[in-house]
Image (cartoon, rainbow, N blue to C red; front, side, top):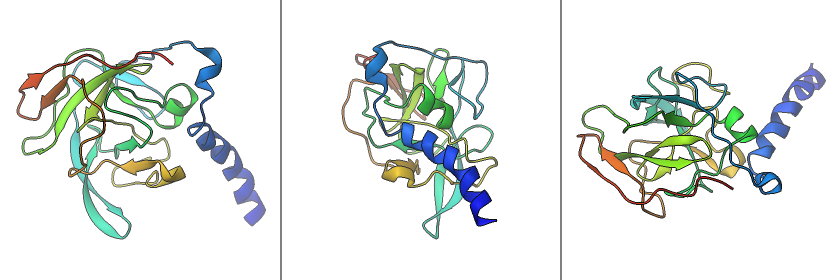
Length: 188
């Protein structure tokens, strides 16, 4: 039984490892993916992607986190900056980015951080306090946080997430005010 489990886990481990590498440099090409609604199989877009909140257990402690409109936990990737999302291509199939077709993201009233966007290889990706947001394909239902701490680079986006490094990101606070700067790099 243990051998079967390892055989099933091995392909997932290889895919996760791909998210930490820079195979993107080999092609030098920019690919944007867009679809009509949020799902966990790849980059998606909508004209009004919302961010919601929910509660998950992280490190044995109950945390209020950002979620997709359907309740799936959202994550941030530590190599990203406020002006560049670095997970795309094969990585984005495992960690689907939350993207918009256009406009600004919205969130629940009382959300203390700043929602915004960054333009990049995934399209117009939603950010929170300067961190591009992703779901995890290993989370199948609300309340799961199976991606927490993977590769030491993926973490649950908590409501209290500190501002990310960098700047120049178009932002919109949860109250609807906005400001803008130059967008980040759109290719590799």
